Amino acid sequence: MIETGILLEFGAQKCEYNKGDRLFGEGEMAQNYYQVISGEIKMNNYNLDGKEFIQGIFKDGQSFGEPPLFADVKYPANAEAIVNSIVFKLSKKHFLDLLARNPEIHLKITQTLAKRLFYKAIMVSEISSQEPEHRILRILDYFKNHVHKKEVPFSFKVNLTRQQIADLTGLRVETVIRAMKSLEKKGELKIISRKVYR
Image (cartoon, rainbow, N blue to C red; front, side, top):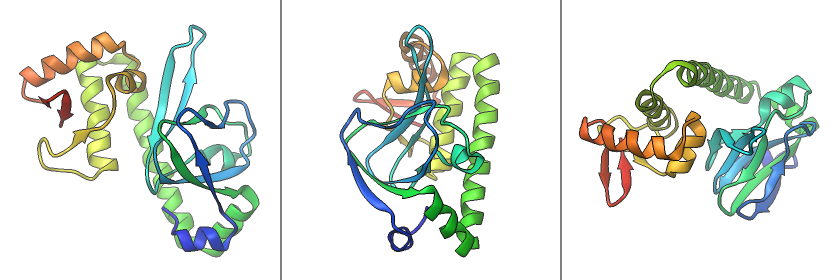
C-alpha cells in the first residue's frame, strides 16, 4: 500500500505480534495507521454467545482500521494476529501529515476504502439472504479476484480454514464443510489433499 521508505520517513514503527496478540480492541479510540509487513491480521467481533464474526483478513502490504481513524471514532472491531506478524504502526498525526504531503497516496487509500465498502455492502446482502454455497463462492471470489488477482479457474489456493470461512460468512463450520463438498461435485471448487482451489 504505502512504500516502506515513506512510512519510515514519517516515523512508522515496526511492531512484532505473536499469534493471538491483539493490536487494538473494539471500543478503543483509533490512534494509529497499521500496515502489514508480514503475517496475517484479522478484524473481528464476538456476539453475546461468543461466536466470532471475521470482518476481514489482511496480509502483506495491506492496511487496516483506517475508517475509524478518519472519522475520529472508536474501533467497531478487534484486530488480532492470526499468525506471528510484523506490522508498521504510524500515529494518526503523522499519517494525516503523510497524506497531506502525498495526494497520490491519499487517492490510493481512498480507492482501497471504496473497494472495501463495496465488498461489505455485497456481503451484508449475501449473508442476510443467500444460500450457504452462494455465500462461500462470493467470499472466495472476492479473495481470488480482488485480493490475490487470480483469473484462471482453480488457480487460487484457498488459505482460509473452514472455521475462518464460517466466521466470514456467518455460517456454521459443519454447513461450510457440506456446502464445499457439494460445490466440488458441481465443479465449482477442487479439493486436493484437503486443500481447496477456486
